Image (tube, rainbow, N blue to C red):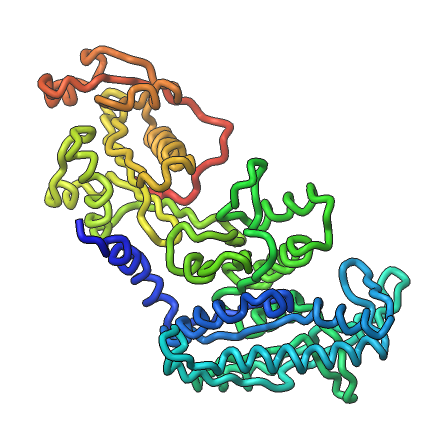
Length: 451
């Protein structure tokens, strides 16, 4: 094996994403702690790469730690209400100072072109301006938020024009009213408003946490907005990074952003790993799950062969050639995850016997822990019931326990339909398992219309 095989494999995996992202608009939100913590330089290399691949990039930054430093240096109190800074006139001056300094630091970092770095000869151009019209938050729960505001309108055409010229648009958390007042904005509200108005393809938040985690501390790679709301209900800490960014992510999805990502600011390369690998490293939030189960077409033959050929080589499955698959493709359904084929299954009905054969149930090894096998089985059971079948049978040499755990029972070959008995391979000696079918209380798999 060549020593560079992992890199070649990564490039091949990334290729579909590189093609898909060209011309897409991504909004990336970084808190002021990314600048203060020194992560901006490495992130800038990744931003440069995205732009060079044709991504239209909008960068929204925050300034909370920088403002806190200035407020405390002036002996002013740090006042918050529900995680949002209460901004009086003195604090607003601190906000303006912090925005100016942080913005200058960001633009300087984006402009560097050091030799022997990913920024060599990059030539990134940065655009800025008063892209936001803001309005005051007003009085919330009896608390006057004063110069704390929210986005009222985004100058979309101006931003689109800058993006069309290949520039990175940098947006600061300051908005202006038609009367000339300035308002302090939160980075999460600003990023959500900008992404929504631009109809962005992705909204990405960098935060202290690696993403949403489960009870064992492992990152949950995908959650729906419904699942995300459940996470919020169970959390005691409401105004940490997750408490601020997760509600914004949910709101963005509900307003039409298809995919929102939560990434760690501490993991070098997290942006590239999240965008250009199928698994990702952070938490992806969507309105609906990314799985899609559908009837296979002739265009899916190549993907099905790629799934089943390793198992055919091991003798787990009976070998099927391309020609046979093309002839029987109407019997197959495929399961896609994020437009990648990760599973397949086939149903062969024997109506005269009231039985159906479940065949070629395969799940990509990377996804076998996701319960996709059960989803494919459920779809076959549902379709068999729709066809008026009373029993489902399967022939297997190595997965007997899996089927037994799901209600199948061992049976003799003589219990198979007569036509199947004639085709039974006594050299292969596959074991026969049969399951009686009955309507289930489980939610129906609506996405499979035909098998």
